[in-house]
Amino acid sequence: MKKWLPVAVAILISSTLVLAGTIKVWGSGDLLTSTDLNANFAHIHNTMVGGHGSRLINADVHPLAAIAHSKMATPTLIPKMVVGIGTPSPSTVCSVNGTCAQFMAAGLPVTVTRTAAGVYGVTWTVVRPNQTYLPLVNMVFAAGPGYCGAQAPLAAGFTVQCKDTTGTSQDAVVAVSVYDDDP
Figure 1 (spheres, helix red, strand yellow):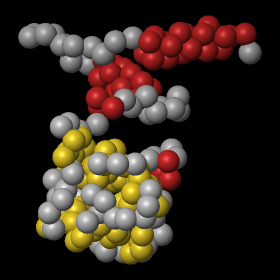
Figure 2 (cartoon, rainbow, N blue to C red):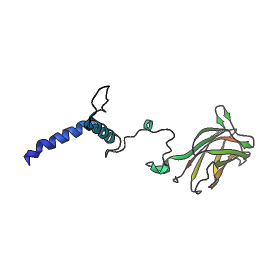
Figure 3 (cartoon, helix red, strand yellow):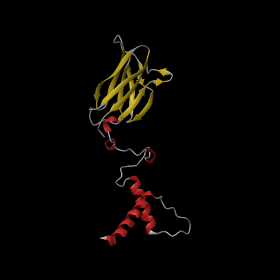
Figure 4 (spheres, rainbow, N blue to C red):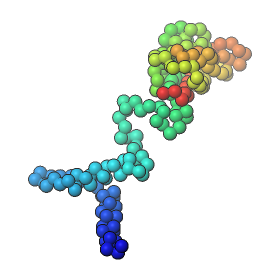
C-alpha cells in the first residue's frame, strides 16, 4: 500500500496545479503537446462547470442568448416583462387614444394602447400560453392622487386602469411588471 502513496500524492498535486493554474498560451515555434492541451481543457472545465457549481457570470453570456426562464434559480421571482407607459422625465402621460410611448421596456415585447382616459391595453406581441401570470402595476405620475391596477389578464394581454381617489379614470405614467412561471 505504501508503494502507491507517492503516485497518489503526485496525482493529487498535479490535479491541484491544473485547477489552480492558468491556461497555456503557445507562441510561434512552441511545441503543442497533449499534456498542455488536456491541462487547458481541464482548467476550463473545472473553472466553469466541473463539479464546483457554475461560475458562469453575466459577462460570459451573449445578450441575445435567450436563456430559458425555467433555467433560472427562482424563475417566478424574475419578471417576464417590464414596461413603462408614458415618459417619466419629464412626466408625460399617454393621453390620446392610440399607441403609447414606452420606457424601460424589457423582456417579452408588448404594445400599449390607450383606449379611454386612464385605460391602457397591454397586448403581448407573442400570445402567452395561458393567462396564469401576475401583472403588477405602479402609478409613477398622475395629475392628482390615485391608483392603477391590472384587469382581465388574458393569453393575448391585459388592461391597466388608473383612477383618482374619487374613482374617476385619469391618465397616468405607469410602470408594469409581469411575473410568470411559464417559459
